[in-house]
Figure (cartoon, rainbow, N blue to C red):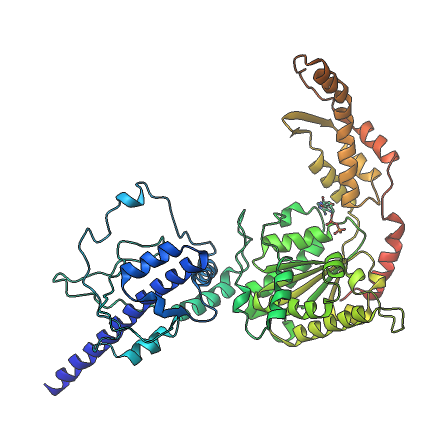
Length: 523
Ligand code: ADP
């Protein structure tokens, strides 16, 4: 008997605690909405909400680092990590909002007890509400009651609370341990789903910088500058778009993709590379490889070019480097792509010639790279250089893996030409035909980079197009009927003719790259 009385008492207490949490959560939702409306300048709507809910919303303010937008962004991030897609939060209604019936079919829900009533000790309310709201003044003695906006779901997955038949108030809702769920999702994601491709045609969502702890306002400003160099839009370069470069692709995947996908394999001696250098002649696909990393891997991609460091970061470079790595850790897993590395990290002279700020920036970059090497953070530095012999040796040591992205081989050149000049293609609604001996052209383009070959293909394709410009121009002048446009076929001779007028941009440096590779290539 004694036991069952105790059990009932405990059950009642648990139910009361649940009810209290539910009530606090609902009130917090209203406070967040009220705060959002006032922030956005919807003062009338905010006032009406305050009057309708009778909670006394004005007596509360939102705690630091929380607002409706942050809550939504966190939810979106959580959802994305768990399901690899963005949540759908709102949808168009078939009938306008005004004519919709409340979800509860018109049955008004019984009011929740007044906040601060004797049944709910004020101290308990305060303790719970700390998560989101803090009171701005003492509660008034008004007798306002809180009616949950049951019919209104704000486009969120907020469901109405099921009621028992007698309408005795809300049944306690089952509490969901979201923190645990997020951790599970992260574990699961790290174990088997990451990295997933960049969401197609969608903007990447980032955690708000405002939630970054330990940064003063100056640092946050710098963080905002760097955040502009994060790829938010899909660069849309896939591994298959890169012709040839099989070894480079494999090594990049080994360095960036697999450690995130199979973390259990990359421990101890197999701990992931922290830095990788792509070096080689210009136009051979180094940037393309980096873009493929950004497209194909679910890492936050910082696209840092020397020009942006030198021009935009002037003066603040040293601090910006520190913030860059801090941000990368915050948004991890991250890839920091340093393009044209020789312009940022040329050899330090140690003499008066070098600017003091530049020397400090280089030192900071080295310090940050060391920090990465000592940590387990999933932050990876991918660097590219056309002039590796100009690089600072201390930096080179920290870029443990060095890969030559060389001039394309004969089969790769053939694949490129047939890719850019297929037998039939369509440009601007006009059919372009080619009649090319791809093998011959591949042999004739030895020493050309991928970028050179693309230019030659473009020039060859322009030849028949040029021939129709006269017809097009005379049509415009005379305003006669549009002539039927038919382009001449691009032939092997056209292509060879273009080659005789162009020179490969990097053939002269081939030996130097090979010599440097022999001396510095990592194992
Ligand atoms: P860099 O090595 O100087 O970073 P990029 O990656 O910017 O060269 O390449 C320049 C352009 O050349 C690319 O946008 C692409 O059109 C072409 N290109 C170069 N190499 C390749 C390749 N291996 N496969 C496909 N396109 C390539």
